[in-house]
Image (cartoon, rainbow, N blue to C red; front, side, top):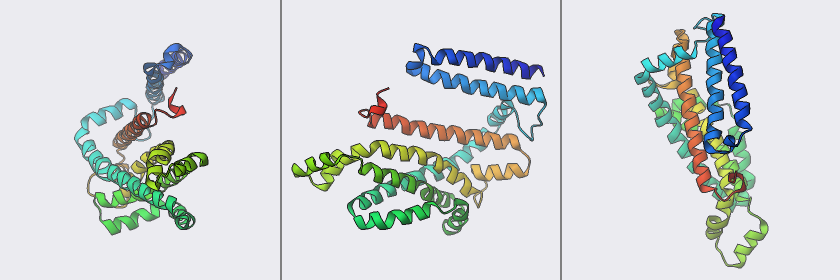
Length: 281
């Protein structure tokens, strides 16, 4: 039980430190904004380690973070092969294809009242289809390699980006659009210089939501057929062998990859929408 009490004491001390940091001037600086969540995340891991070791939880139920870290270090080549198959070949290509298709369709919908009334309801219907039902069908259509995973990702990310972009293209004010028309601006000039910049916060919201959906889609698709590597294949195989440390190691890599992709999109958003009021603080 000593480990448990030490972990609780560390957690309480870190909590008090975080409260003090959050209320200080340091929290308004970039380093302070990064330090607070890092301390919070580290204390969660310490508490997890203390609970598992102090209460004697079996590794097959919940392995300690130190065991998961050791597994990651030992199985690094396998985890890299799974990462390349799922993230680099499945999730990211599917995300880019889905985002590009959503951009083209959103512009078409914006130009056509017929598509606004006809295509958006159909898109809503497709988005409501259960992915666990679509995934095996797409795997049968596109094969067991990365192409079928990218197809599942396209289906998952297309509609959130489309809805946000259509809403964003309508975000500019009527007076601004009338002013552009008064100056004789064409549709494409108005789109490029007024409506697309106004839509950027909406577009990036859609991209950030879709970034996590892309990882989920690629992993879920691998449950229905994949080569002998990939994160979904690894999780389903290791669960059957009760290799929970490897399952958690794969989950940790997927979570880190998802956080990195989300952070990259957030950085690009700050660079593109520096003028927006939400980026001033």
